[in-house]
Image (cartoon, rainbow, N blue to C red):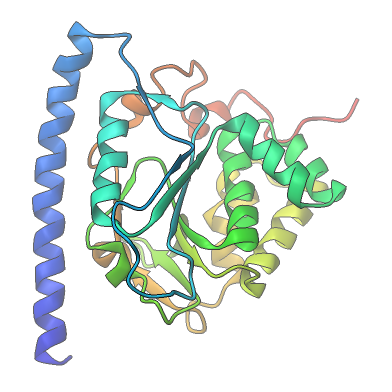
Length: 267
């Protein structure tokens, strides 16, 4: 590895550790904040223009996409959003709640895909399919609501590439960070597989049915561009399960799928 690359990697790892430390401090403060203001919520915008004018055209549109069951969020989730805006000042921001996701799919895709989406009863599974559909249509960078960049996003996603996938601590593909151009054939393959999984209704875990398991089975890591989470994007530094699901009794999908069928049973 060239010296310059080694220095850059060291800088990124150092930045990641500093960000995690500062983020965890804000998380501790948030417990105090919400003790005194338990009902205080902050609003995530459906759209926010770039903070700075983009310098160059990019194969992958400079858009950050996120979704959640509500746009009224706790302080940690809002701080996570603000931090991503600072790390991607030349990216516009687009956000959709549950109802907006459905409306988007109904407007842009055929009835078969909308029917598959409508069968999903767990929000995380819906979000898994929606992120593929919105990126296939518009392109951009998808981030989970608890995910944040650890390096300027314009450097993580160069202007010349047409897709980028994140790998986890285990070295496996995940879907909490996806960057893609519109009409990406790999995304369409993923969409078709999720659609197939829903129709077959043979899987009982969101991870395998609509989530990272689909990426792991379908995409060849040796043929698609990937980036380690260590150099791109972390989760859960600013927020955690408590702050994300404080207003959702069902809790995180890992709990919800234990009591709710992922796919609505036909009567």
